[in-house]
Length: 306
Length: 190
Image (cartoon, rainbow over all chains, first blue to last red; front, top):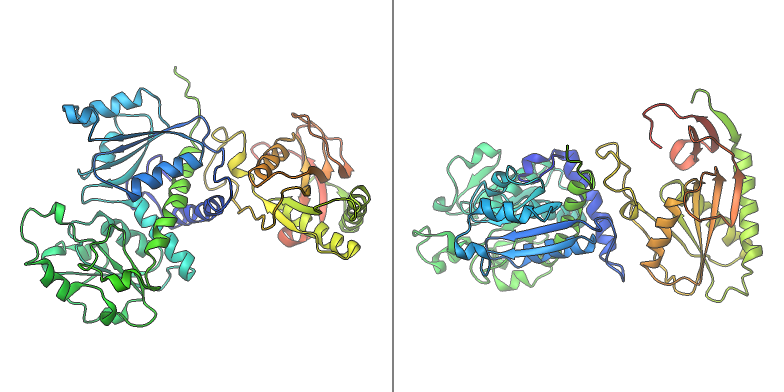
């Protein structure tokens, strides 16, 4: 594994499997009375979030704390970013604290890659614009592996707003790397042109949804839509909502959250046994512990300045 | 393995474990240890030897002695100092499915050397609860302690030089039971 985690492409299959193995051990730590191990004692981790987040920021914070690291959380609202400080100056400033890792979430594709040049810290991409969200893909692979034993030969449909989804991009890569075949499905306006070049199939109706073993539903990202991609939410739901009538027995439903209840996913499916959504959230902490451990335990604690 | 001297063969290892099992019972009479005894092996070969001891103790006492295993990877004091990558040790899961509060825990490991592994294993135990007593059983004690730790049960004392390596092979992983000493080759893991 390289020193940073920017894209799923930084990991080969063996690298993903190593993180899954570690995550299993960390899941056990999360089941103890004292949910903490001293692995990153004395190291500092900065969480730099330029975008709203509940799950990702809280699970990265918990992951770092359960590894005994010291955590600094910076949100763009209320920080010097509000006063117009540039990304570069912010990263330079925070790097003065000599953090072992910077976890960054930003609305700009490529931001995580960009800051690797401005800091000595390991950089973890916690979502950069429409580009990638690798730890989400890893926790989804982990959740599926826990539930089904593995992904080899699985048929996975990714349904909804693929165009605006960094989760879709990371998950297509990760699912395929682990041996699954992936089909993306959504209105043509929300399927990026050329998506097949990633190796997946594309569909514009849910007619063949029955062939899927796993239905991965994406959030309709209205905050990223400046134009009309769908006529109305009601019409979108009518054609693309994953609900009980469209699912068959035995299919598994996943969603990265937060869900627009009743839009891309019906309430009854969210609350049913078919949904692994709570398991996904739970996996988040263990998988992020595994990623931080994998990135940081290899790096020297003290850097000798020549 | 070239240049390896066998110090314990299959039969020696079996007899040694039986002796240690008897010593454990002698030191912890079943009616005296209030909340009972439990065996905890350190991954990986310590866990295998621990499981065997657990079997022997269950046989000898006629009562089920709880068995668990700990992985000390996240508790090492040299994290970040060692080379890391595909050759790094595999991390196993800690499994302690019984309450350890008030129990007498016997930690089992294959080789006692610097004592740092045992220190880490004790830390793991204390993250699970408060044992009444912690004892240590090892198949081989090769000396060179760096911490004030001593074993309660020793299979064999093996005076060694630092540039020698003690290899414990167990049937479950390595195909046979054997303890050997060999010269440490440059570049091989410690």
